[in-house]
Amino acid sequence: MTRYCLLGPTFPYRGGIAHYTTLLAQHLREENEVLLLSFSRQYPSWLFPGKSDKDPSERPLQTEALYELDPLNPLTWRRTLQQIRSWQPDVVIIPWWHPYFAPVWAGLGWGIQRLKPRPQLLFICHNVVPHEQGRLSHLLLPRVLKTVLGRGNGFIVHSQADKAILQSHLPKAQVIVSPHPTYAAFGKQPRQKLPISLPNDRPLLLFCGLVRPYKGLDVLLEAVALLKRPFHLLVAGEFWQGGLVAYQTQIIRLQLENHVTLLNEYLPDEMLTACIDRANVVILPYRNATQSGIVQIAFGRGKPVITTNVGGLGEVVEDGRTGLVVPPENAPALAEAIDCYFDHNLEEVFSERILAGNGRFSWEHLIQELKSLNKC
Image (tube, rainbow, N blue to C red):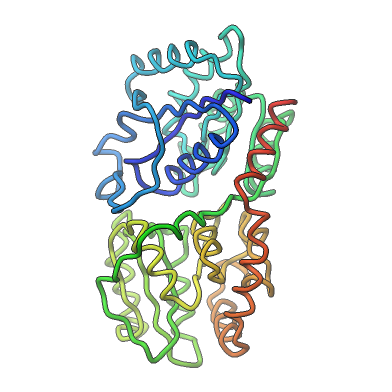
């Protein structure tokens, strides 16, 4: 039995990283001892662009954790390190997804390297580099990655693209590519009734999750305007960076007012599954990506996905088998794929293949990869 110390967000914090940390802790605890150290505060309110970083779900995913760490308070870093030292884990696992956490992870990584006995330090890199970054961030990021991730003994990434990025900064890093595990646990949540009415006389397309420029909603709207038959598009998720007005303007310009519904709010787990179950297909027209938790929520419920060939999305969604994959920023190609999906009635056959192949996205597989890194 291995003793793991897992750092990262969990309930009451919301979002894909919190869901991931929670499920990883739950599955690790099936055969190991696990200490989960989470945040007393994740982001200050002035820095977080959404309405709240707390999960509003009625029955959220949650697991036992201690809440001590504040990324902006070095005194809590010291107390967290003392908790790690007292617990004496064999392995410490830290998630990496945004440079905001660089100072706290660098400080804890420095301290972990000096513990005796010294545990293995593993990083799970959700995004080696952020999806959107300014010029200053782009210039500083190489040094940040070497300072923080350079302290790790091994790394899990979820796409070959992210492995290449990581090894371009850390050529000698021990890196394993493991598919993003399934979020099938969402299927155990009670569904909510959708707070909006949707037409029943036409197929429903779903774009869901936080709405940010890199996710390509504008490209999807252009594609919907090109479709051959009547469809309805539900856009469900909180709009960030003041983008709502721009999309509303685009919808009017394309004369899609009667074909698009915007649900501008963070989706509790129950509502997210209700949206996915109601849709005929989930569409992720990302401009760039490493992987997507939305794919694994959809696949966990047997729902096919149409997406773009960026990052690891084309590695997860098998083109012509479990979904369709098109080039990014290409509205005509995306429209053609959507038409093809319905012209050939692909929903049922794709769904069957998804459910039959979900084993390759198991948490057990990820844990075996963590164990193999621990032996390196």
